[in-house]
Image (cartoon, rainbow, N blue to C red; front, side):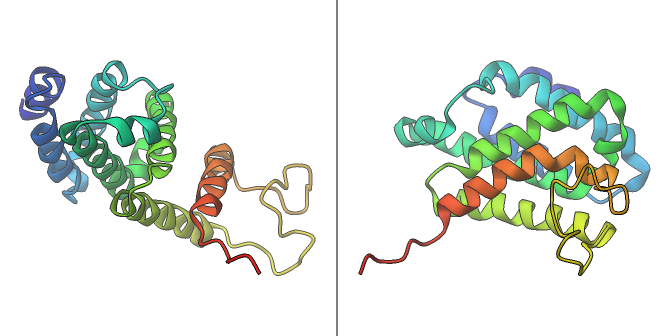
Length: 189
């Protein structure tokens, strides 16, 4: 299979990893519901290969700043891959119990990549965070009642946080901090 060849043979080879990740991103962008198992396999195999290359404890902001051109390109390509596959197939991945850990790891990578001080990379991540937030909001809009308008409203039985939104609470909290840190700062008076 092509996915196995790309992920297992070429992704871990430094000379091929950028072009391989670009190929995987193109595959991830295909909208073909009848290939759900293949997209899950693509996601799982890619995440399995990425973790040893780029541990979750890596400070990607510093790695990007001090990295060579190909390493910087790899971080950008990883942002493109993760945002594409999560945007196109996130609900499918979310529905698979065996992919819950890789999904949370992918989101963690996207949070780390969002911290990189490169405008184009930030825009890639921001577009995904916007899609996720819109999707979660459309699924279950907040009440117009200001008391019920709280992201962490787990104890209110009248208006509990929807189950799908609970999955993303920790990630969205981190995203909020990253987005605020990227906001334009007013000039001192």
